[in-house]
Structure formats: C-alpha cells, structure tokens
Amino acid sequence: MLKDTEALVNNIIDLPTLPQVITTLMTLLDDPQSSIRDINNIMGKDQALVAKILKLVNSAFYAIPTRVSSISQAITILGFKTVKSIVLSAGVIGMFDSDSDDFSYQEFWINSLGVATISRFIIMRLSTDPLSGCAAIHPDTAFVAGLLNGIGKVVLDQYANEEFEAIIEKAKAEGLSFRDAERSFISGSYADVGFWLAKRWNLSEDIQTPLKCQDRLYDCPLEHRGMAAVLSLAKYLCRLKRFGRSGDFDHPPAPKAAVQILALTKETLPTVTSGLAEEFEKANSFLSMVRG
Image 1: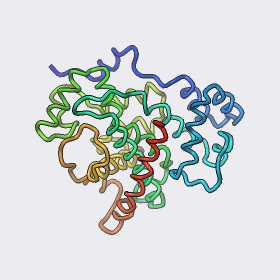
Image 2 (image 1 turned 30 degrees about the vertical axis):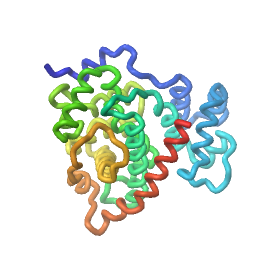
Image 3 (image 1 turned 45 degrees about the vertical axis):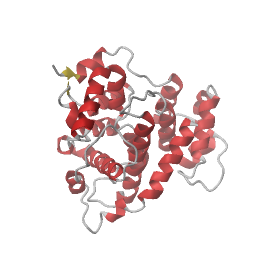
C-alpha cells in the first residue's frame, strides 16, 4: 500500500524546525522595518553562527574586494536577501546527517549546493532577458530554492525510512530516478514533502511553489514557473556533470520543458551552460566552510 506523504508530514510532530536563532533572524531579515541593531542583537546570542556567516561572506563565492568584519557591514554590502540566504544555508546544512550504503549525505549536500549555485548563476545570466520570465527573481531566492530542491528526500529518510530505503534500492537496481522509483511506494513525492517543510519554515511562496512543481513544470502557476524551470535545468546540469548524488541512478533526460519555458535557443543556451566548472568550485568551497 502506498504511504500518503501529506498524512506522513502531518503526523510528524517533531518535523524538523530551524534553530530558534535562525528563525528569528530570517523573520527580521524579511522585515524591511528591521534595523541592523535588531539583527546584531540576535546574532550576538550565537557567536559560532556569526563566525560561520562571516567566513562565508568573505569567501570567493561573494568576491567582496574588502574584508568584512561584522554582520552590519555584511548587510550594508550584500543586502538583507543575501545575508538571509547565508543564514538559512548555515542553519539547514548539517541538520540532516545519516549515511546509508546507497545514500550519502555528503554527496547529497554537494549536489544540493551545486543546484543552488547553478540556479543563482542561471538567474544572473537570464535576468536581463524579458522572454525568460526570470527578471523578477532575486539570485538569492534561486540559491535557497536550489539548496532545498531535494530536502524532501532527507525528511523521508528520517521519518519514513522503510519506504525511503525501498525507493533507493529500486532506483539503484532498475536504473531509475528517485522520482520514478518513489511512485511505487508513496502517493505524492519528495517535492511535496519539501513544499510542506518550506511552508512549515515560513519560507516565501516564490520558494515553496517552485519546490513543489520542480518535476512538473506546466502544473506550476505562471508567476513561479520560471523559477521552477531554473531548478529543473540546474538539477539536470548537476546530474549531467555528476556533481554529487541525490538518489538518482538513471541518465538524466534532457530538460526540454525547462529550456522551452526559459525561452532558451541553440544560440542562447551556452550563456547558462558555460562557466559551470567555476560554479562547482564555489559550491564545494561553500560546503567546506559551512561544515567546517
């Protein structure tokens, strides 16, 4: 009998919650009325988090020409949205950590950060193209959506482990994607679980909805379809380049729907597929610093 993912999530009393300091900071960073003093007051309660955030801010990923020595300075230079994405990344990575024989969390987070980095990269490349539908998407929104693209899988691993292991076993034995294998064991998908978790964490609609629709783009509301298509394309590029693993054992099919929705052509497609090696290096560096 298929296990219903919505019922599963609703029955998880201790569904993963972000640390209180992260939740409070994200609320403040979402509020344009918040002051830097308010944010510093909360940051001061977790010096380890402050140190980690400053390490990330000063990394090659953000390429800031001068050294940043305070959260106030980071917000002034990068803005609230970027600092929020850094705070969320620092909070989420490491919340789940439990390798099995066929599913490595190290590989999962490498893949997730690859999707995050490439999603951000694609948005930056397409933001000036009115046909792509990406002009209104902030690069750091894309980064967070990319980071969380597979978060539903690890929730299934933690809270429906029997079904999760059966999915991985089937995918590996038959050369399937996680999405195709899970149809035999759960009604719904890992993407639905990710959506519900994002909702539980009070993340914005422009992250929640693309997470839900990342594997069925034409079901996505038009205002979020561009972001869902970016996720789909970024996932394909990471799988094609074998950057990490996220429970998929098939050869990735060409992302025709994503290419069509983003209005990419043979002439414009190289603008989002060139320079990937440097982005993957950034993703590796980012993960090392978060976990270090």
